Image 1: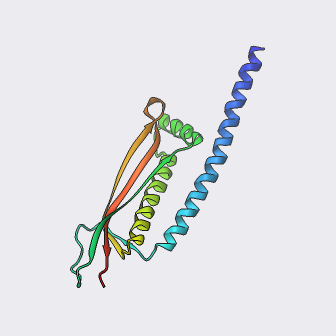
Image 2: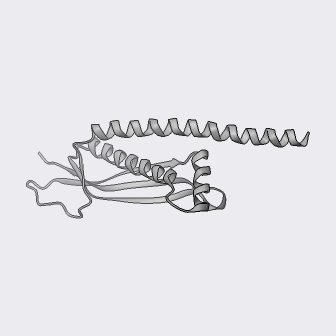
Image 3: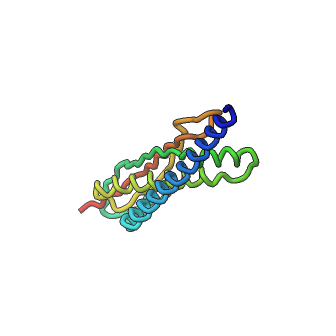
Length: 155
């Protein structure tokens, strides 16, 4: 009887991992599809990291714009990351998490700038932080903030 309970518990864990894999993969693919579509739509808005803007006439208006996103890694990817941490090497699941978060934050910043009538963003910067830690201080949720100075043409 005890063996059946342990086998049942093992099967439940395996089923949850499989479910997490498929739902997480579907959610990530949908998010990347949305990111690519929005990047194409905002492709004409230049985002640069230069600290100063070249002289323009007439002088444009400028304002701070920002985009923030909080993204969590799914259970299956967290499980794979823990395995990778035991053996060392690149943790692709977290790389994907940060890539999606950075791109989403930039898009949100660009969308805010577009609403203000901006033609470009300069002095773009990132801030990244882990706002939720799982067991043993494993990354659970990250926040990425992208901010910069929107250039709003005059006239």
